[in-house]
Image (cartoon, rainbow over all chains, first blue to last red; front, side, top):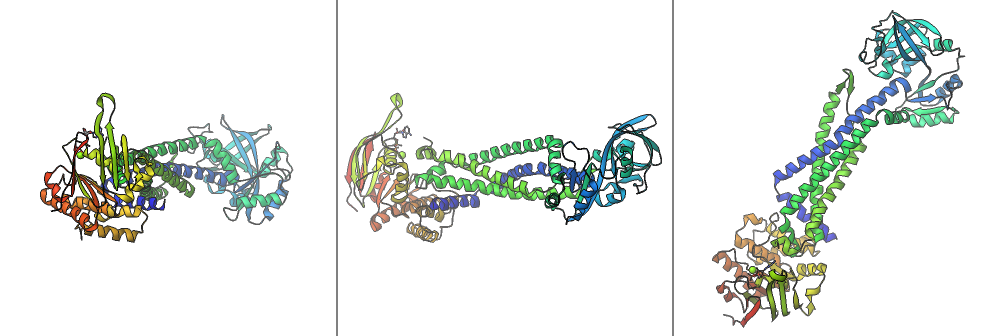
Length: 402
Length: 228
Ligand SMILES: Nc1ncnc2c1ncn2[C@@H]1O[C@H](COP(=O)(O)OP(=O)(O)O)[C@@H](O)[C@H]1O
Ligand SMILES: [Mg+2]
């Protein structure tokens, strides 16, 4: 076997060293495109998913979100939970929120929304809400009769054409809010927030205390507790610590949340991703197979000669395995360079969707390694199959054709 | 050393059947330089391929040193070809992407010798056939006669029991032919190499010490030549 490997390597080495360089370059070029095809789209989709989960972190969920268990509407004793959470090492900030359903009307126009009750001062450390006010100002701690509404319902932002809106509401205007429990109140619009994302721009923010008042709550209820950690990457550890200090509610990291979210919202994306991978793998495998097969057919006589002088079929098959591994390795290498060049280009010049959403691709090492391993495996199989079938032919047939 | 009894080789079946060899018997001793002659289509190549274990006989018996080789399994035949049989093809049959030295030493490597040893064996064989200083050239950079001498070097590097050559000079001019035949003759006389060579050129018999003549798959004469 050792001899087979040495001889196989020698044959492969000679045919690479003295073989046609133009053919080699063409093969490598095609293989690099196959590799690109395998990793490029997933990276773009990865970028999209990353952006999506980034939104989830910046607005509804933070790094860790605590939600009521089972059928409960509220977290029991949210202040107690907050106290425990804030005492956990590695927690940077935490706040409570109250989500309620309501409808907002302004001059005959009515829009259904989710209103989130927030503690404005605390949100500066938790979310990006305070930083995306496109017109007017963010809520202050005294804002009890004021409201922030999303640009899409205000009718001023992008996407207003798609969704029902109030028809260009500006700061200073008054809107009527009817809560899910029937209570009606009038608020002055303090600001418009624009996050270029439905979850934000179809939402409205009101002071936590005001929601409590409307629903007759006693200062201990919340629909979620949102937590930020000091160091990114420690979320899972801190989630477990929070559980350990006796918080008996549901605790999710943003990754837990986005997994289920992605499963829901990005299912079709995932399907496209998988299909494109399968297609490019099949095309890639077929191409490698064809390239090696033509190569083998061209050297049928040579294979016969090698056998006639006593070279084992196994060495011959191995030499083709080495050859195709070499082609594919070069192809992957060239593909990687091409890929990284494109990645850096798109990271510097992101693809723009919805006029404002920028998507830059992410480089996922796991995906890269997976693709490399798949292509190499394929190449070995694609290299061995035709060589194996030819090396089994009789010597006379291989050399003299009959 | 070689004993062949009633050797037969039929191609095809029924109406298209060709009796390329129809019962050939002879014995060849160590150190002989034999020419197999005969008209085109008389069965020379067929015979040689069977003797060199590149093809199977339809019938008859074939032994080398008492070993019945016709019934060996392919893996052993392959090993036998590698270690004991040298075969020189009419069209050289070199690997174009390998240099002269590589064409020769790939076989030593197959036999399991070290790279260094293989290389020096190859150079020695190339020197023997008069290709000193040309071992790094690829076949495209060699003349027909030189290519055939590389093929001979490949065949002799392993120091085979028997060396076979099928019309080794068919593609060569007289000058190159003489060079090749001189190499054979020297190998035979100096190193006692057993050689069986197919040819149809009458003047080649000057170099050999025995001539077997075939006609329609049957041996019609077998004469020993006294050395000149
Ligand atoms: N593979 C084959 N299939 C069918 N007939 C063959 C084959 N090889 C040789 N023959 C026939 O066998 C006969 C002997 O051929 P060959 O041994 O090549 O003769 P030579 O070498 O003396 O010219 C010829 O009639 C040839 O046509
Ligand atoms: Mg012939």
